[in-house]
Image 1: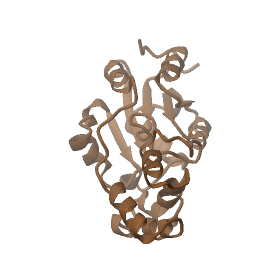
Image 2 (image 1 turned 90 degrees about the vertical axis):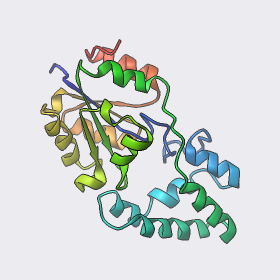
Image 3 (image 1 turned 180 degrees about the vertical axis):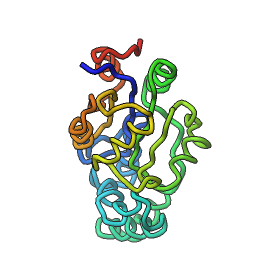
Image 4 (image 1 turned 60 degrees about the vertical axis):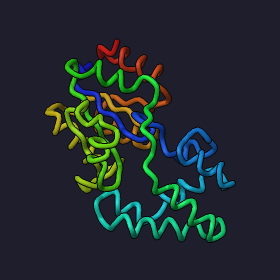
Length: 216
């Protein structure tokens, strides 16, 4: 077994609470789930409106603008609710998210620093890097940060995983990757990474230890 030299994290759903996704549509503890509950929307409405459209697919690889994306989200909301509610929901979606982290994750990042290389690999819109620096203030916890919009590639494209390894100067087989979405985990394994689908800090910690990484 190849010795693991790097741990690469997804951001939303791993380091911070996820927006909600197609695998957890009824989760009212997520940021989107809380808004859906507040406005009486069906679970999954906001995930589909924001992330299951061509405008988002383009924005996450650096094409288009936030304005075009917001317009597409507004149109999708109008198919599910009245105009006043759609405007109110869109306003809420545009508010800065509170700085909250999943239990144990910041402490884990701090422990791993210096023991292994630590990377971040996120499908995100332009501006993630600035958010990490100025809003969440955790940019310096990573040896490298990859935003899909910046590199113009997105998970599960295998090229973004090999890029993440290359930028950490390690082989894919020397990387441990964690993400909350199963198809992103499958893609990481396909390029040779050890991968764990995130479902909370305790199981991630166990998986790191089992993989031979000093995460205690």
